[in-house]
Length: 424
Image (cartoon, rainbow, N blue to C red):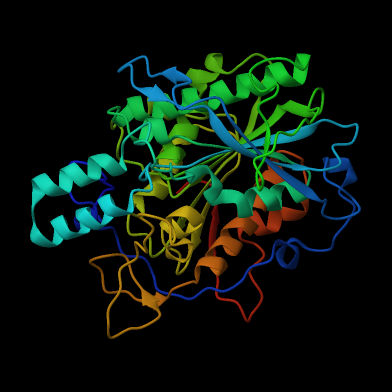
């Protein structure tokens, strides 16, 4: 069953997907799989080891611009992870884009929605759901910081020399844009952020000047990024509907919309929501840019066709394409804000479960069970492959070739992660 997360109907009743082979998984460290730690200085990553990282935020307002199709407001806000020592060589940039999820941390509305779902009261469910998907949020209600859900990934990439910008897309999540328009709107949001960074890097001017805040304290921070960002080496990662968005953004037909001087070198689709767009893949075709797709075998929101979506988008490509299946991984645990351990509003485990099989998961509606990864283990496995992918195709570090093609497997005490190089 295809992904269908329309806010008009109770979401949990629509989460069904396709069966995959059962297995187990455990922690996965990229250095275990990558081979000997040869010097990476020639690849643009630090030869002396991981670097210290700083984290900033910026927010240009909940109504920074409006969607041209609908006039609905969208914010320009993001979390930035970067090496504290920027050095003299410009750093490659990775943009992270989350998918469709609630926008406002309204606990009362969340409780009301759950109660309405149990009572099968569609009107009450819709009223509560509207509060959770509003933008801007009602006075006194905090927005859900969906962009902060990838702090673990931003930190890891920044330690390896990248500047990482995780953008917030709450305005788009609360909007009425759908299908291809939704993917297009997300692509435009990424390009707007890239344009801000292009101006800041080239001139030291623009909307980001004076906008940075310390992520922990909220205090203003002045960081001179001018000439420290290599916009000729950009990577993009999109989770869920964000996966469709970054595929659209990097597609051949849309390269003219990239800000001047920006070159996307690698695209990662993380559990992409593949079927909220049309069947015409022309607008998503990528023919010269390396791409990878990751999906967990216990994903309760997108089926295995997510892998096919990415394969179809790159069907005419001459660049590398990798498919990665993580056994025991679900959809939401890749984002900490969506995961139960965060205690965030609307956080939940989307995998299918059976009371008689504790610790096991399956795709909802199916019968092939396997050990479910913990939240931390799932993120460590995913981050290992994401980090390897961007280090390989943005910095040219060939130590990760065997890992990304499946020639090198996890150690014997770890269950396998299925990796397939090339299209079906």
